[in-house]
Image 1 (cartoon, helix red, strand yellow):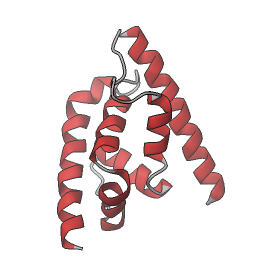
Image 2 (cartoon, helix red, strand yellow):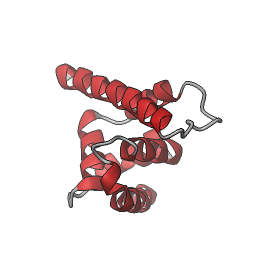
Image 3 (cartoon, helix red, strand yellow):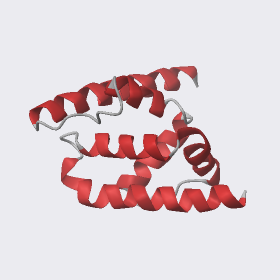
Length: 121
């Protein structure tokens, strides 16, 4: 489990650095209200367990459900701002930018579904 956690953190760091490079190329600046954007993304990614990060990510790009356990972590630990920031960061990466028009709405649906789950548990 610890090994997978380290891998997840490395992916988050690579994701953050890739996002910053992509943002720089597109001349899109990171949110001004969040200094240290790559570090912010890393902290966001660490707020949920690895398996939940994977479920949420795959939920955006595949037709896979997010479990109630992971919904609770998303809403109670990660929060809406981190979720939105990570969603936007991911779709700025070259491998995922072509799917942004579907991934962002899916990310929003995941959030709303999880918010309902969190209210009832």
